[in-house]
Length: 300
Image (cartoon, rainbow, N blue to C red):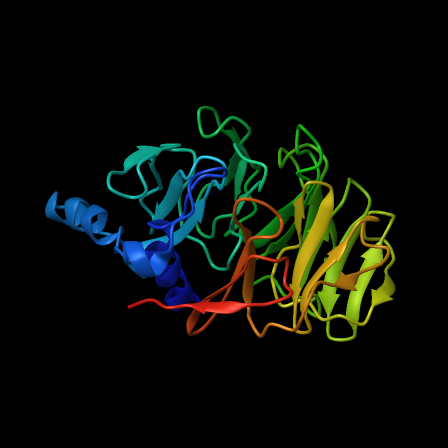
């Protein structure tokens, strides 16, 4: 299921436009596979792509349209022309592969990207990939992680460690060090608002901590399915079983936006907070009115 979603992302990235660009209709421009040429160039050079092969994650900077593509165990690659050409970035700094959506976590406001890689090196860029700062290694590293993008220096991080029995960690120095807050296999999604204010998805609803994970209080009956709560323009959005939800008070309260949409990945923002994309196992759904209505994007 996860790999199917990544392949759909690879297709959709070709049609993503930067913020403020002219409207394009996917049905008009068609769909182009942008990963096969890169994979062919790598394998034709004699380089073997290790298990599970091919691509291991993808993300797009919505403000520029730049595409970031992870090739399994062969690092991070970047395209500035909607996937027509790729060049390797963060060489020897980012490696491994992605296990879940938002393992490559892009700040929706642009330029900043955090990579929570599995079986490889992890780190963050605050300037569109020119310079990278490494995360302290944690064994096989991460499944996914949330970043406090409201902070210009993005110091607060909340992440779930891979195959660790539910080990959860926070950082207050942009991943230079990690603080273990306990084993919580019942937590299935994460959000961070500052160094001490956290939120998690749980089978009973949303739980919130204001003391760095020492104690938790239930704040909502919504059930997050998106692995990471996403901050955009001062509002935090989360994809839940009940639909897209949001909070304007650091997770103290949550409200549903529009109608229920059955999806498992997202949200991904377009030109503004009204234009949002989510995904299910069949493909992508899009709203242009902040969740009031949804339409399925046809991928031929």
